[in-house]
Length: 338
Image (cartoon, rainbow, N blue to C red; front, side):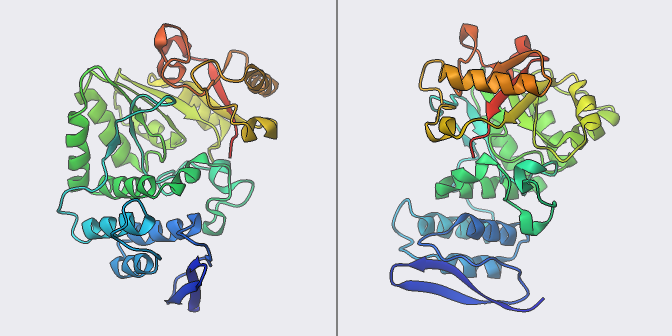
C-alpha cells in the first residue's frame, strides 16, 4: 500500500499534516479530532501501535494542560497506555446517572467491539473497513465528548487482557448492592471470552440487576451450546441492525436470559430534530410514540412498546421496560435518531 500524506487536524491558521507509511488513513481537516480521526486513533491503540498513537496525539492542536480539551484527555490516556500499570484516568463505569439513564453503565468502543453489527454500522453498504461507521449507529455521536471516547477506548483495551479484566472485575465488585447496571451503553461483547467474563461477573453479584442490548448473537448461542447457564439477574435485549439472519435471531430469542427484541425503526425527521425520543420527565411525545408503535406493527410485531426515552421509570412501579421480566416477549421500539 502506498504512503499517504494525511491531514489530521485543522485550525483557523492552517493544518497539521505528516506522512503515514503503509496506513490507509482518512483525510481529516477539522478544528478538532473528528470521528474519522478517533477511528484512526482507536485502530492504532487496539493494534498496540504506540508510535503511531503518539504521532496522532501529538498532532492534536491545543494545550495539553487545558482541562476538558481533546488534547488534555488524549495526553493522559497516552500516559496510561504506555505501560498500563498506573491508576486509571477514566472511570470504568459511569455511575453518576442522569434523567435518561439513572443506572451504573459500562461502555466500550462502538463498532470495534461489535462483531454482530450490520446495517447499524455499515448502512446498506458492504461490511468492509471503508464503510465502517456509515450506518445509523447513534453511539458515535457521543464521541463529541472526548472523555466519553477515551473511557470507551480504555475499557476496550482493558477487556482484551486477563490483567485488564481483573481491573474491570474489581470495579464491578465495588458497585453498591441493589443497583441496576447496564451492559453495554456503547459497544458490545467483542468475543466469547469477554461474554463469559461478564456473565460470570453477573453471577458473582446476584444482588445487582443487570441488563443490556447486543447484536453478538452468535456468541450467546456458542456459549449456550457449551452448556453455560446464564445468570438469572441478567436480561438481554436482542438489538436490531445485526448482520445475522432471522433464523439466528429466533434462536437467541429462545434463550433463558433473553427479554425480547429492541428494534430501531425509521420515523419522521421532525421527531429527530425536535428530540422527541428524549423523555423530559414525562411520557415524551405521544405522537412520536404512536409512530414508533405503528412502524413496529407494520413490520409484523404484535406486542409492542414504544420507548419514551426515560430508562429509569418508563413503566409502572418506577421500573424500566428493557430490564423487566414483565415485558418478556414484547418488542420495544425506538426511532432511528442518527
